[in-house]
Length: 127
Image (cartoon, rainbow, N blue to C red):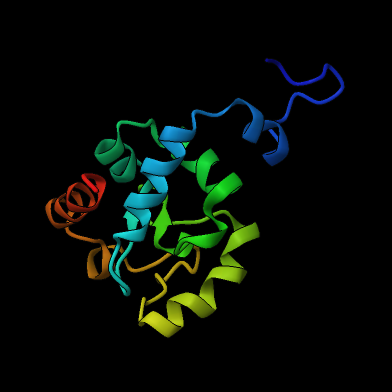
């Protein structure tokens, strides 16, 4: 299904009609396993769930409102400026330090343990 010719952008409403709901469930489950005060990249979530990083981003944009979405960033630890302002209170509450450039978090201090995240995901996935 393609978007109408007048609009080639993927809107959240359009994406919800076209997405694999099993992939959505896997991504949201993985995001729920990220501990408070830690952050993972779209790529790490994708590697754990078998979903591409861009698809993870789209899933988070369309369905991520009820999971700790502020714990998922790009590989540089950054978020789009449109989301960053909304993210800052969550990061402050969890003790996630802002990077010097102000567009993301201090990556090395807060990146989650990939092996631990994968184990937590696999424990919950089997239920």
